Length: 452
Image (cartoon, rainbow, N blue to C red):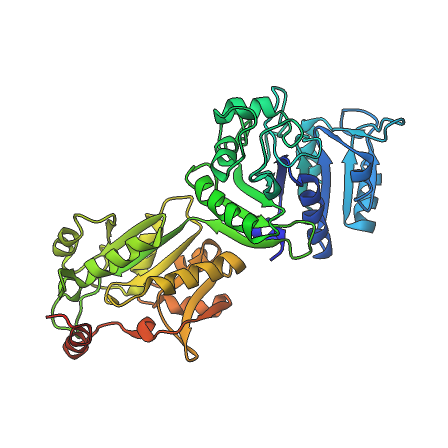
């Protein structure tokens, strides 16, 4: 997966890279991807940048003053020729190091004709994989739309020392850990989520996507996954990218919050009685579905109710599910219930699993496989398949939600499939087909499971 997809870059974005562990490489990797896609992109810095890093850009323009240029022609010409241009302040002739630009200029760069994104290196780390910011940094322009705190996975299990960490004493203070402590995912996450650490100076409107770079070994991968889970425990972090930005396919996984919407508003016309509350062992059909979802470490679970609302909600009293009511359940179908669920979803959810209330034999391994494929692809829609046939539950990435909201109330969510490509995950179980619509199906399922 490319970095531009993982970061969900859109037209007009102003991106600030902060931290250590490869943020300059990440910035130029992202710029190269956008330029190769035919988009015009400006890279810049509000701190300083070294000569070796300047050489990574296809074109470099050093501004003579901190104020806006009186003539933008050289910048526009460079963009016409190269698609990507690096803009800095003056260059020190002895060191070759370039000074940063005035942060107020960054929004002017973004307004230049045809510029798709401006990428800014907002602090320095002296080539260390991990750091804490000083009092004067990071320098993040007010109009920034995305902040990317970066850390190198090669810092895990290393000691907290000046040799490995930039401003190690400040890290020690923020983490509440003595110098020399081995750096665990929990300790690093503590600093990245600290308001004076990785979340310092972030504009209120900006999204935050953390990048764990240099994930090259299985040990790094395991630690990065653990840290991603910890980072997502902070609502300010929107998602976490795991990868190695020196490679063209820079991203291995994207971790975001996945929620479930259980569609339980149906009238059960073929069953002849509200099937959501039919007995299933020591609970009900809907109770068993929720119980199985509770084993899947979801960020949130909504049950959309309609018919038999009171009984359904009462059966879920001692669960973690939150119920929302579809007032149009009598005159609508699944699409309307899904829209009700999406409208009630927390704003930091990245994807939803759409689960049927009459699938008590759903397997957590299927949910794990579907979620993992989404992390690896960020596909708009992911569904399990068995012997070439698609089943449930389906996962819908946030990017597909506008299509779901456009569906008519009487539609089935699968009608959205024509608008987006669907990623299929082969699974070894037919449980993805086993919904219960009739008394015969219910009786057979109970007998198969040995339930009275």
